Image 1 (cartoon, rainbow, N blue to C red):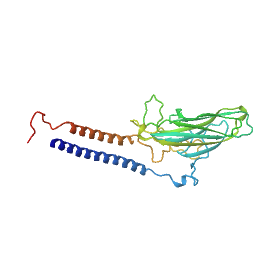
Image 2: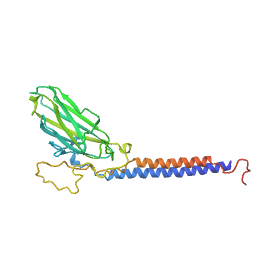
Image 3: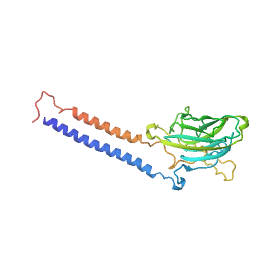
Image 4: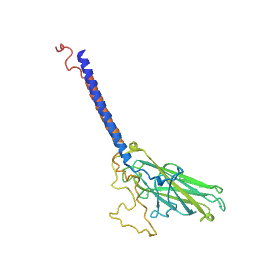
Amino acid sequence: MRNVRDMTARAARAAGLLASAAALAFAGGVAGAGAAVADSPSPSPSASTGDGDAAKGPTEAGTSFRTATPIALDQRATASASTGDYLYWVLPADVGQQVTVDAKVTVPQSARHGTATWQLDVYDGLRRRQACRYGATTRTAAQDAGSVELSCALRTVRGWAEQWSNDPLPGNYYVRLTVVDLPQEDLGQPVQAEVKASATDVGGARAVDGRLSAPLVAGAGTASPEPQPSSSAEQPAADGAPDGGWSSGRWSDRWVWTAVGGVLAALAGIGGYRMTRGSGRPAQLPPRV
C-alpha cells in the first residue's frame, strides 16, 4: 500500500507540473496573439462619420480593371453613372478573411420602358471571376422599382493554392457592377450606385500550409514599377495593403492550439504510464524491506 501511495503521489506531482507548463504555454500564445493585434494601427477617428455610418469613401468609380477606384474594407463608395456603364472598384483581401460585397443601385422611376437586370461580379488579382458562397449577384428591378440590391459573400481567402484551382488568394479584388438586360430606350438614364465591402477573420479554423511569395496585386510581377503621374488619364489600381500590412500566411492561432494539444497529450501519456507501470517487481516476490 505504501508503494501505491508513493506512486500516486509522484503521478499527481508530475501531472501538476505538466498542467502548469500547458497553462504557461497557452497564456504565452494568447499574449503573443493579443500583442500582435495591439500592435496593428487603429483606424483614424477622422476616417468615420460622427453619426456612426460607414467610413466615407470615393464618390466615383472606374470604367475598367486598370482604372478601378480603390476602396478599403468597411468603406462606403458611391458613384453617379449612366445605365449601361461598367463600374469598377478594387479592394484588398488578406489571408483568412471572408469578404462580403454589398451593392445598391438607385434607378429613376420615371420614363422607364421596362425591367432592368443588374449584375455584381467579383474578380481576384488574376482577374478570375470568383464564386459566391451565398448572395444575390443578379437581380431584376421592376419598372416601378426605385432601387435594387445585390450581394456576394466570397469564400475564405487562402494563403496558398494549387495552380489548377480557382481558390481565392490574398491580394486585390475587383468589383464590377453593370446592367445586363434592359430595354434599349432606357440606356443612358442616370443612376446612383453604392458599394460597401466588409470582412470577417476566421483565423486558424480555415488556415492552410504554404503561402504566396507576394500578394496578387497590380504590378506584383514588376521588379521596379515606375511611378505614374497624377495627371494621367488612366491610373492603375492601387495595391493598398490592409491596415497593418499583408499577412505572411504562416502564423495563425492554430499554432497555439497545436502546442497546447501536444503538451496535454504528453501529460496524458506520462500520467497513464506512471499509473499502470506498478512497482516493477513480480507479484510473487516478497516486498522490499
